[in-house]
Length: 222
Image 1 (cartoon, rainbow, N blue to C red):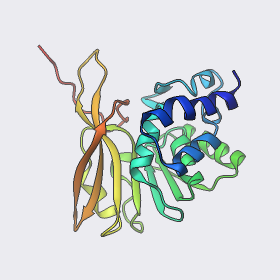
Image 2 (cartoon, helix red, strand yellow; image 1 turned 90 degrees about the vertical axis):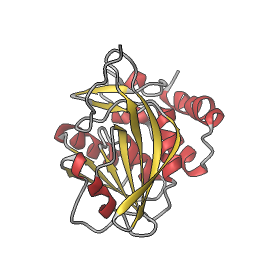
Image 3 (cartoon, helix red, strand yellow; image 1 turned 135 degrees about the vertical axis):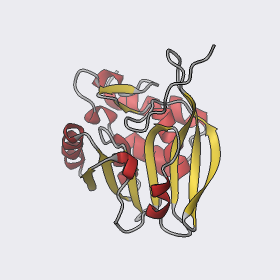
């Protein structure tokens, strides 16, 4: 099966039947080739319904989990969106293809460099920043939306003031537990800025890999 066929199959068989209805997200994921954001050794896994390990605690989120988070974020053309823990850059590319003005933040310089090459090759405009994802990008103009691309134990308080007052929103997966030897479990949440704090609303159950730097301490079950 060609990558193009696999990409269409992903949209038709993984996303559409599973509550992904956003025309913007579906169209962007149909157009953006996931394999361009993976090393050759793992490109064959681009459209598998699983996270793809990138090494050093980094991963490409499974298509369905990412699509539902992007749909919850509801990107609007022209909005300023920060992608935290952008990794290989695929998520930032999809949001840029939705018309958003995207900045990708990650601590891994090698992944950021590869992602920039992929953006350029696809004609996408995405700004790249090297930094600590846990801190976001303090001191810059507030974002319309922030996507933290992975599972985290809690949303750091610093992110509240990095969102635009009134309409700023943040989407991520909040861990409910992390048990050694078991799949992590979590809930997708949307957090909206209210004054200097966030109001967090659970949206749906979601399983994805913990984001490096945010990983919670393991919980042991007896």
